[in-house]
Image 1 (cartoon, rainbow, N blue to C red):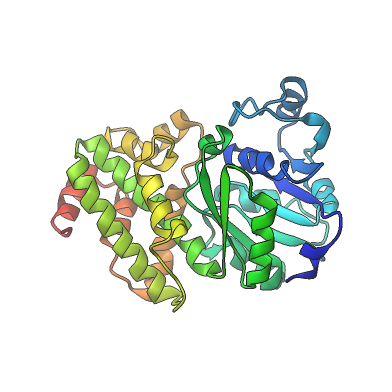
Image 2 (cartoon, helix red, strand yellow):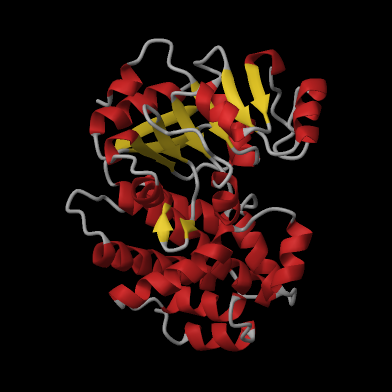
Amino acid sequence: MNAILDKRNLKFAMVGSGSWATALVKLIMNHQEKIAWFIRDQKNIDRVMKNHRNKVYLSSVILEPERLIMSTDINEIVSWGDVLIFCIPSAYFEGVMQKLTVPLDNKFIVSAIKGFVGQKTIAEYFHDEHKIPYDRIGVVSGPCHAEEVGMERLSYLTFTSKHLDSAKKLCDFFKCDYINTTPGTDIYGVEYAAALKNIYAIAVGICHGLGYGDNFTSVLMTSSFKEMVDFLNASHPDPNRNVMTSPYLGDLLVTGYSQFSRNRTFGSMIGKGYSVQNAQVEMNMVAEGYYASKAINEINKKYQVEMPIAEAVFEIIHEMKYPAYVINRLAEKLY
């Protein structure tokens, strides 16, 4: 196990203040007396102090401000923590990181970001750009909507690290009565699966907006899963990977079917005739699949995996092709 995770009086810091970040803060506070929290907007900090809630995101969760060390200065928060959990929309990640000036030496990095920086996963970014060894990087994934964590509904998370002992230790920090945790070592697979499932949820949403029903959706989801597995096996083969488990198939299913899925919602708006820009503005939340679609389109130029569903989404939301035409053509390739 990494020595940092064995440290006495281990301190956690959260970088990000959206719904998922708020849900993870709630979970960490089950085991930690205090947590440092980077929140970009001072007004949000003031609201948490006054109302004991993140009024902007996941307002159902009651927080304890006296146990939170909140700041708009990322360097203050990163300096305080031993375990740094990054939970920023991928589109804003580099902008936030540009403000980071303190070193990441002796820090354990946990990514809760389901997206890419350019064509790199978050783990690859920290390893390549900040020279963080993989034994100090973990990833949290799984079919787990922030809203249901806020309501304390039974949910499942997978914590992945190249070192299984580190993954097991991370599981201990987050497990509680309503969160089951599982360790894993497939750090590449879970990051790519988490990004791909958002693309496929957009596809489901587009089809829903166009008026396709459950029968077609079931075929679309089945084909999406096959497409995901084909890509994972081609890009990062792992003989120990079990794609039938929750961070792969489970996360795909919940993101494609759930009412809480912002990617499905975004796709549905596109299918109903919204422009990409108008859908993004009206949602006031980031649909990670929009950015992942562009990244996967570029990454797959190297691997040349047949990915008609991902390609269809790219054509609709980035090349502005007519959704009904693209999906009608896609439907002929599904079975």
